[in-house]
Image (cartoon, rainbow, N blue to C red; front, top):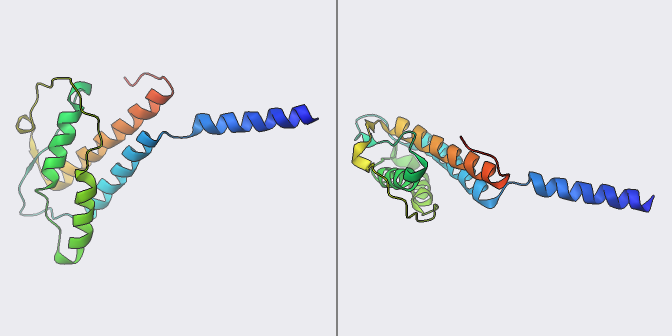
Length: 145
């Protein structure tokens, strides 16, 4: 009976470890939520169009994220009432979160199409979701094709 209880406890513990999300994956998921929150407070009319990376290759992820982080500085709050929230959110998204890569990317920020702020944020959110899926798949040794 004791062996059965110990076996059940070990099984439960190991299953919890296997299903736990890595801190890196959680960070990407939280950044995606932060971007979605920014969509509600950003001005989308009469604003500058922003270079928007879409579907960057794995070697260009750092360049794409840098483009998004630089583009975020050009965003404007919808009104003065959301200014404090807007500033905090931009500050969070400007922090570096990808390791520096030695890979060379042929694309530059200026090579990407310019889009409205909402489309820009949608693409940034999709990139974070891709990074989340990649880091989750990486943890379990799955292919991310």
